[in-house]
Amino acid sequence: MVKKVVALLLILSYSSLLFAESNGQDSSAVSVESVTNIVSESSVAPLDSSNAPVVAAPVISKVESEQVAYNACVMSEIAGRGDAAGKHSTVGWGVFGIASGFLFGLLGIGASTLISAIPKPKPEVVPDPVQVPSLECYTEAYTSKAKSKNIMTTLGMSCLGWVIWIPIAVSISK
Image (cartoon, rainbow, N blue to C red; front, side, top):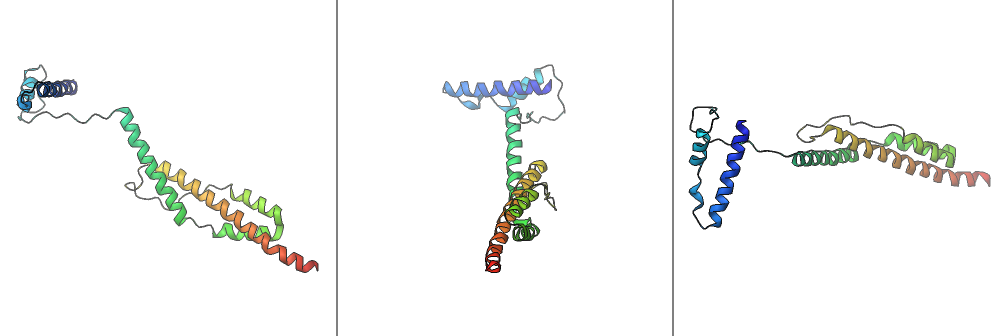
């Protein structure tokens, strides 16, 4: 109830300031003292006995809170993709790709690429909550980027393994 009264008084004092400025009057006519007098005249008991002015806490609307959460998620996704691009190793997938492309040709290229799409890599080290406000968004972005990196490495290296196999097969057949 106290918050509603204070919010109403602040709204009224602000509108009074606007009205005074539009009429060319001095805008200091509505002061903190007049607002505190109105509060003291109301039926609400003061919270403390000091003469400090009552200040309302900032009200965050649902849209603003959703925007803050969205911004935190976007920042976390950027950090997750950056960490996956820089820290996720695909050496094992590269070796697997070369071997499967070399040994099994086109079938090895397709099979190794499909196999590399199955696992969902997770970050080994979770960053500080100050850097990454939304851990869920961070891990989803990390997993997505790391999985893409695994698939592309396996596909490229298995194609390279197949390309290495072609001249060897041609030379053996002659």
